[in-house]
Image 1 (cartoon, helix red, strand yellow):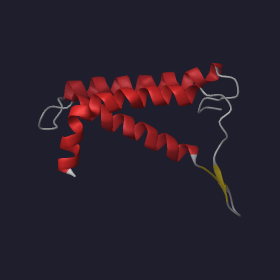
Image 2 (cartoon, rainbow, N blue to C red):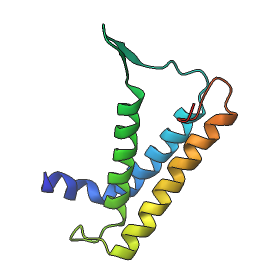
Image 3 (tube, rainbow, N blue to C red):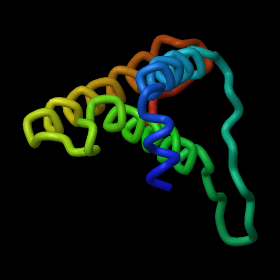
Image 4 (cartoon, rainbow, N blue to C red):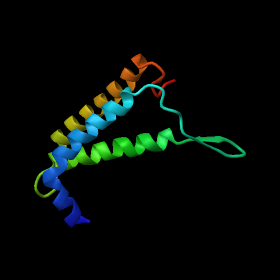
Length: 107
């Protein structure tokens, strides 16, 4: 696994840029159907899993991009990156309010 991550590291900033653009693009598409699994007891919303994977990949690529050669990151840089990721997530969810047919995660 370490070799794979080491191989990907030089390209991480490009993957990160493409991933951010993809998130913005998909968030801007109106009328995406909600994904649910219907069971006899309840409906299971898959959008929570998709959000977890989406932002997990974003966090991984961001930390991979900004970590040092030994894959370490300073506490200051860690906090700055974390705040920026949270602000991006809030902005991404908030901008969906103005997209026809979309709702933010609060709705």
